Amino acid sequence: MSAESAIGRVAVVSGAGSGIGRAVAVALATDGVHVGCLDRDADAAAATAALLPDATPLVADVRDAAAVAGAVDALAAATGRVDVAVACAGIEIHGTTHELDLEVFQRIQDVNVAGSLHLARAAARHMAAGGDGGRIVLIGSVNSQVALAGQVSYATSKGAVLMLGRALAVDLAPDAITVNVVGPGVTDTPMSAASLADRERSQRLLDRIPLGRAADPAEIAAAVAFLASPAASYVTGAYLPVDGGWLAHG
Ligand SMILES: NC(=O)c1ccc[n+]([C@@H]2O[C@H](COP(=O)([O-])OP(=O)(O)OC[C@H]3O[C@@H](n4cnc5c(N)ncnc54)[C@H](O)[C@@H]3O)[C@@H](O)[C@H]2O)c1
Image (cartoon, rainbow, N blue to C red; front, side, top):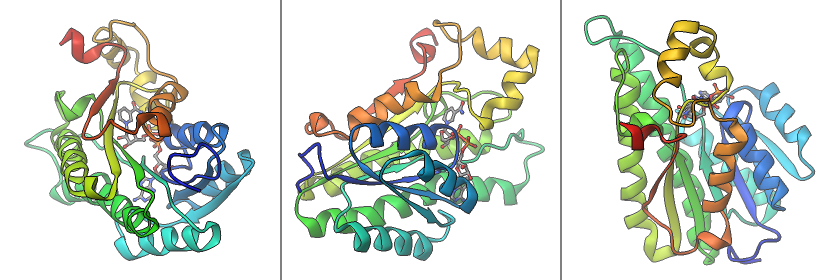
């Protein structure tokens, strides 16, 4: 089955155990895609896979390149192909310039940046070998473009994810593999629960959003599903904000 076919495609989604990754897994499955649900949390990966008609739970820490490659190889061995990879695994830990812990800074780069590379590279190897091209989607953030106070580590990582997506798009184009970055704004997931529960912080965030509300994870997943679909065959190296107008507002 080719990457241009809507039936029989196979995807691997990291961070599939929660939030945006789980919603992406659901959206891709709705499009008829077999989804490898990868997470470091085995129970969470299994719980997402159990929601889907056709899925494989996969356990790996995205910081571990060999573990990610092993999981993607196992998916390819079981299904015969890999057409789509979506890197949703990510962490956000706040810390101002003067207070941030350098070990935490490095951990955030390792998960958000290196973890995205590990998944993309492991999947791209199978896409290139299959000869039918592929789709890779990375998850950036509004913080790929703008920073809030206390976000030195996170905004640095998300800026790097944006450039990683562009660099991969250029590198993988000869194999007909497209690579794009989706930039969510505030999205209602466990990651943002503490911020959204804090009335003052929540109001400060919502004041920046012309649509005046947080996104549902399914609204981010819909944009990812488009970029992962055959319809997006000529879109590569793009950054698609899905942020309720945050970046337009400035
Ligand atoms: N929620 C938001 O408001 C928001 C906004 C912009 C961008 N994002 C980005 O979207 C992505 C998903 O975030 P979310 O809100 O769904 O978060 P979440 O915390 O709900 O889910 C993240 C998932 O990633 C997994 N994960 C974390 N570290 C991992 C690792 N080292 N290896 C494998 N799996 C790991 C977790 O177990 C979890 O299942 C992240 O990259 C995040 O930065 C989120």
